[in-house]
Length: 259
Figure 1 (cartoon, rainbow, N blue to C red):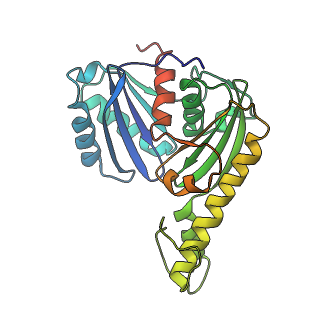
Figure 2 (cartoon, helix red, strand yellow):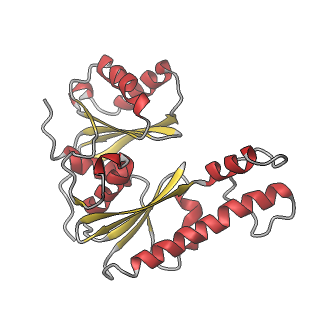
Figure 3 (spheres, rainbow, N blue to C red):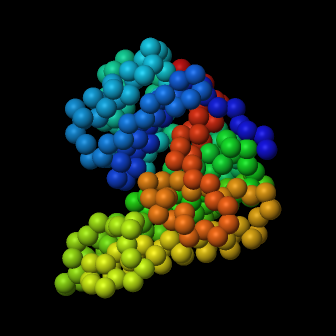
């Protein structure tokens, strides 16, 4: 496998629906990583960004990539980053120099998180593979012969529980539980089991079906905050890579010309 060239010094900010993750890459390794809720106040975001930069002496000299699935959060965070003295800020887009061919309809509608995960597969040296991101939403995306062919999007665990609560009269408001029993012996346990196990089993089954159409050398990568809860349902080899998106954006950053 031929690994992609990666930017050795860059700050990657991933704005997700639930959390913001700030990863500082210095001298080719992740030197610091801070996570905080997406709905954090500007003063909290500024403090978190400044704290992340303390791991390197370069501070404002490092370019910053902002990848967001929450459009409204980009402008305010960009202002915060620039106020901290950063000179080069790039908002990640679908038409950036991704290390693969985008073979889907309407690529401008793609979430940059999905593109970054596929780029992460490429950064790890794969031309074929499946990237599964288990977060607020769950995405299953396919790379075949260096072409991103598309994938599946389904609600994550908390979204499912929230929908059950909002569309029923008596079911309680819950958070998902990775230790849910196989069989729930009360309503709470039944809800948690009913969301966790069928979803995890379904994700593993779909990945296996998709993988059967890929070369035997295809990679299968799990990422996202709830990836650990899905991993036990995979019968074959699956790799957990929490920093998959960061790797992908390092590959993009290596091809950008910052002004």
